[in-house]
Length: 361
Image (cartoon, rainbow, N blue to C red):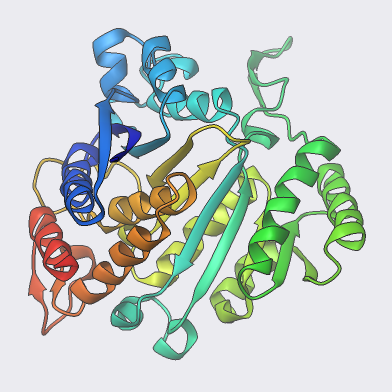
């Protein structure tokens, strides 16, 4: 009997539809190679949803997402929506809502440097060759969701912008547990990054991570590091890290900085996981409106996001391994413009998909 997986695709804005087209091609290959069936539905999220429905994520799309086994997303946003709508109508609000509604509290962001791309990094080869960092970022709390928030008029004139950094001990404990469990399957080392020296939320973070480590994960090496020092160490000696545990804001900043160590933002996937519901898988890069529609975007991060969905939501680790190996093999011959170098064939979005499918066989 054929196994059927319900997968929802949310291409989004900008280059999203182009890279998602390559994801679909890989999914078709997987169906044939592994004898499974993907029950695929598509929906709108972000700016395209706002233009169609007046909201960046509709209740109907959210309901279908909740009923899926996994959600693979492209990217949201673009300059045409900057500053033109209320905060809750901006494209990014759709992404924040689906994360919150699905209680996706754990964001896994690998920063891996394929050997073929070691020379494309902004650092020397010896610093990045073999790089394999996993960021475990808390996704449902912190300053992006804390209340009060907003922009208010001051009594004497002028305005003030307010955002609240807020974490409960339970939120810290559940994300720290994910980091320790992931470390046990990797290099068994966690760096917990916060700003305990100047922020009470950071102090609570350090205290709760320390207690959980002592109670349940003393076999895992734990080091506390201030977030600003972590940023410096990522540039100075990135291979010292295995798993980096951090909050929503610092995780956003640090993982994007680490992405450039790997050669291109176009290479990195992410997974957002919750407590048993469908995971959300998306590339780290943005919607790249400057190249949208030109057929030159790098689809690898989206394809690797599919691989993470296979691994973490669909129980298809073998297929995930095959996709990741095919990406590595394809990079030996073909490159999109963001990672191109002399001696390689320069291809567009579809050409990169062709190379990956050829490597899959």
